[in-house]
Image 1 (tube, helix red, strand yellow):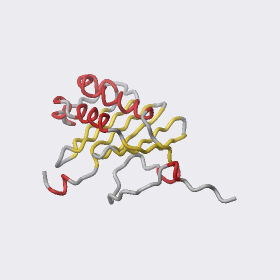
Image 2: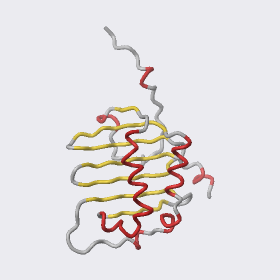
Image 3: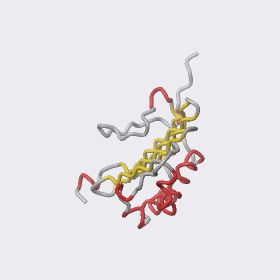
Image 4: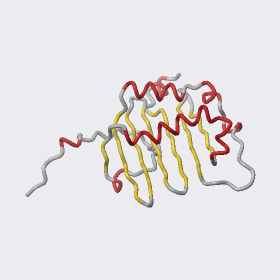
Length: 164
C-alpha cells in the first residue's frame, strides 16, 4: 500500500434505491459516517462515528472472501422486467475501489450470503447513535468530496443559546 493510500480516509460507500426510498452512507476508516435517508421526497441527513466494535463488524462484513473477490463482470443483469431495487457497493481495498452495482434483487441473489449482511447493516445504521444535520447544508448523496476536507462540527450540546 502506498503512503497516500494508507492515509486515504474513506472505507465504504453503500447506496440502495427503490421506489420507496433511497439510503446511502459514506464511511470513513476512523468510523465517522455520513448517512442520508430519503423517503417521500424528504431527506434526513445524519453524521456520527461508529464504536470500535461496530467498525470491527463492518470490517468483517467487507472482508468476506466471496465479496473481496467479486467483480462487476460476475454480476449478471436480469433478463426481462427489472424492479427498481438498486444497490451500489464501493469498498476501498487499499490501492483501488471495488465498485459493484446490482440493478435489482435478482442480480444480488448469487451473492446473497455476502451482500445481504451489508444491506442489513445499512438499514440498521439509523438506529445507531447519531446527530441529525441540516439537509440544505449537508446533503451530498454520500459522494466522495472532490477535495478531501474534514469539517469539524460542534457537538449538538455545544450549540450556543439563541439570542433573545
